[in-house]
Length: 88
Image (cartoon, rainbow, N blue to C red):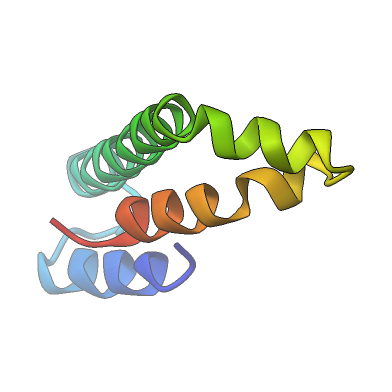
């Protein structure tokens, strides 16, 4: 996420908006960045909840054997995070 802001700043400079924080230059860039962020977050949450439903028995098994909720959902979380961070 932090690598996006320098690219947005450079992109706004290339568009020759002076000052770069003017509404005409900044608002579209912020909209694009927020739209992509929301899309990634929603895909990650959707995959995580779907994974929990699919592997309910495995998660309950981990919990019944004394595992923490982080240990029980670690594999599902890693796959969901990978999907959420993959560019479309």
